[in-house]
Every structure is written in C-alpha cells, then in structure tokens.
Image (cartoon, rainbow, N blue to C red; front, side, top):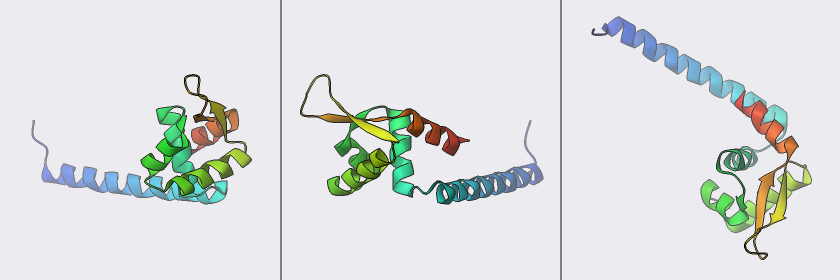
Length: 110
C-alpha cells in the first residue's frame, strides 16, 4: 500500500514539530538544571556506557584531558558522580554516577 504525498508531508511536518518542541524542552531543562551541555553529556555517557576513566569521557565528548577533568571535578563537587579505584589497576580512577547523578539523568530523559 503506497503512501500519498499528502500523508508523507504531514508526517514530515509532524516529525519536525515534535523534534523542535523536544529540543526546546530539553534546552529549557538544561538551563534550569544549572548544568552545562558538556556536563549533561558526561552524565549521559556514564548512564549509557557505564563507569569509565576520565580520559574516555574526554574522548567521547571530544574535549582535552584537562577539560574532561574540569567537567568531572565540577560534577563530583555537586555530588553527581564519584571517582573509584579500578579493580584491575589501582592507578586508574573510574568515574561512576551517584544516585543523585542517576536522578538527574532520569529527569533529562523525561
């Protein structure tokens, strides 16, 4: 069964409107949260990818190691993540979400 051009156009317009409103709501949430986009991205990275060293956050966000460290430091100061010793290499510090960090991510996803 083929789609009519009118239906396809309506679907395309609806998708654009939906995405625009969703992004606007997300932007408003970021402003209200007091977090930067990079901080939110780091929290999302940890939520979806699990614990990792700071350098992996930097690579995933495409920022310098120094910038990644600053992002992690600020989030740790806010109690949204913590540094833990790696079970296999004590020189490595893995970053994990705290319960408060998990709650922030849940709110962002909603």
